[in-house]
Amino acid sequence: MSVVPEGLPAVITITLAIGVRRMAARKAVIRKLPAVETLGATSVICSDKTGTLTRNEMTAHHVILADKRLVVSGAGYAPEGTIALEGAGDEAAALAAAEPIIRCALLCNDASLSEQDGLWSVQGDPMEGALVTLAIKAGTDPATTRAQWPRRDEIPFDAAHRFMASLHTAPDGSAVIFVKGAPEALFAMAPAPFDAAMWNAHIEAAASEGERVLAFGIKRLESVPDRLTFEDVTSGVELAGLIGFVDPPRPEAIAAIAECRSAGIAVKMITGDHAATALAIARQLKLADDPRVMTGAELDEVSEADWPRIAREVAVFARTSPEHKLRIVRALQSDGSIVAMTGDGVNDAPSLKQADVGTAMGIKGTEAAKEASDVVLLDDNFATIVHAVEEGRTVYDNIRKLITWTLPANGSEVFAVIAAILVGFTLPMSATQVLWVNLLLSATLGLSLAFEPTEPGIMQRPPRSPHAGLLSPFLIWRVALVSSLLGGASLALFFMALARGDSLEYARTMVVSMVVVGEIFYLFNVRYLTIGSVTLRGILGTPVVLLAISVVTIGQLAFVYAPFMNQAFGSSPLEFVDGALVIALGAALLVVLEAEKQVLRRTGWFKELKS
Image (cartoon, rainbow, N blue to C red; front, side):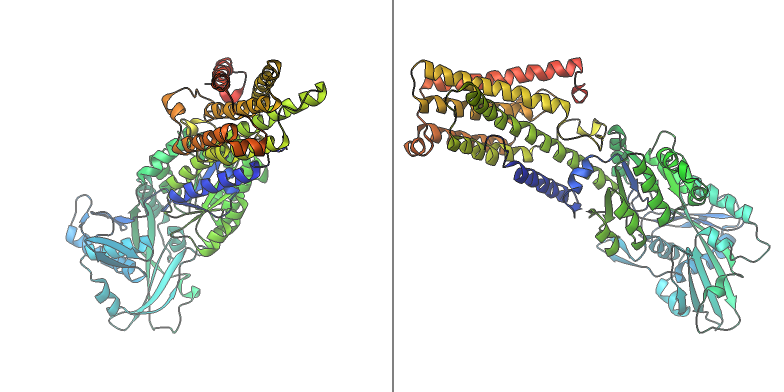
């Protein structure tokens, strides 16, 4: 009974459950309980860009034709703004030249806008919503235009082919195919001669400003076919132009990345966007001092042996596929990293399962992604992942505190009992008294540690090693030291009482009281493992700690002075002087341990206590 900390498994489970509740309050829903602790060890976070690191509020900012650029004013989905020629030239002619691409953007599109109380929102894909907003700014009525150009068939967008195509009947009865998608995909459809260098220069210019670029193409047919097939768009699609979108970084994501870097957590951006666009956003987010970018095509050329090095050194992965995500996670893990990975699509499920902490998006995530994940972000926000990591570190800290506090209580009992057996004197605690101490302390003081708030500076520490055990050298030393001090003080009181002629019951009551009071004072010390506890905040504690101490105090007073408890547990009322002596020894224990903590921290004997 003395050796086994029987309440520890239950209290640790409760601590994890409290962590789940705290994370849920911060928009991170934990689907698998062990993920709470794993989050605290996270050393790399791999994140998508759009909607996670950025606002996911697309705004068409530039309309790019072969020989001119038009700039679009306004932000968000509100159709308020103008389209003007950038630089000198005939603005009316430029606007007329942009009509085909704007019509293509509106018709090869499934989104719609709605307004409520002055706030505009999009139903459908955010980028498509931005295109509807662009059409309205150009003076086009979406409903009228779509009625005049009815859709006959479509090829939906897919990551495999990276474009969407729709077949329409024009007002004159002819058939027209509108295509939108990744520039590379539409360049391959364009008829010769095609000036790829000129268009790539436009793309690089837009991407360097942090814009995401889509290409738009038009193909006219002599007759209206029954179905739209991939063969219809493999060639002959005239490039109408490009549209550049801005999606500003979330301010909270910038702050969260700074917090990650101070906590020694690397952040990797993995996106399907153009490399220059992704790199520009990475610089705005300050993802690294000098972030490197690699594309999926470049990754395909990397040898298997070089993958861990590339995954470690590169901060931005652009134009990637789900297979690249999976390989990046495996490469990071092979280097000993604990990886959290975000994803939202069906194709992300393998990488979410492979990651140590798979994190699905709650808003835009598919059911397959959520089922494969350990955590679901209710707001699709990168900052929420960082909050979850902070809570994970807090949970791990609280579990360590719980173990560091629990074991000396058992250790002091074991110390006293073994000493009695070896030397041959009467047991200083009866079996029922051992049960009383374990029940009283574990159900109150032990449980209160599960509610401890986050320690100051927790996100300035480097991630703990995944191979580190709960019992570090410092904690083993602390358990041995406190067990010896508390056990020694208990035996000293026991022999003192017997030497002056007190009854065995009285002496045992002194021992039980010393263990309980010592653990109360030790609780304040263990609330902060690496910094001083003798502060106003440390002494006052949290409401849960104060409530637990009140319950323990009432229970122990009943144990000492209530006649029915005296009869049940073989205890005896203590005199005031002896009670004061017990309290003084408990306070002395706190002072000694605070001094020990400061000495170890200043001398650097234990790495975790260094300043």
